[in-house]
Length: 216
Ligand code: URA
Image (cartoon, rainbow, N blue to C red; front, side, top):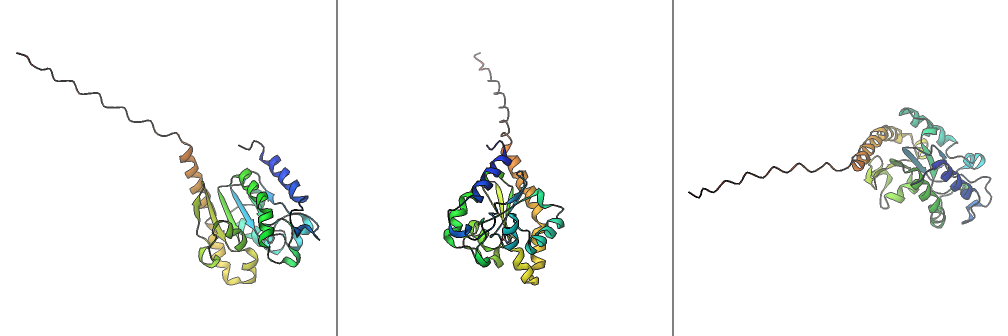
């Protein structure tokens, strides 16, 4: 049980900024641990910081971030109400894909963030975060199809940058996004039902009066 989520997340963020576990920190300006509400019901996981994220030390603050803000606005949320993180927390050079050993090195940070926040819904943005929960999934097939497991929903979404590059994906992305509140509510109800004590067993019927044997 994490008593002070904000303090726990701040401690993880400090470790991320000082991290030298893989080569990715070389040449970066800032580590990008993630940002948002420690009590978020929805956690978004992207791929890795880009140029602007590296400069500011914050996730999704470039063009993809503008689009993510727009999507959040569609469901009446601000980014301060969710938590936004990435699979790798330092910018890969020239925005190349993160390498498998870099993802492995960074995994404990993300695992710990998830444990602290314990979100109802984890929405993955793009292939790399999707692969954590849907290892054989193809994004074009699994996007928008939640998996309910471990008392939460894992929900694969396209990466905002992919949608900006290919506007044909926009309709699907926005329709998928609009299902997020319903997923939150479903998992909230599931957790509430789990937390309820089991109904008391029904009172046993009183035993039937034994029929008096007539001796005479
Ligand atoms: N793309 C990502 O995957 N993450 C960011 O933080 C920014 C862009």
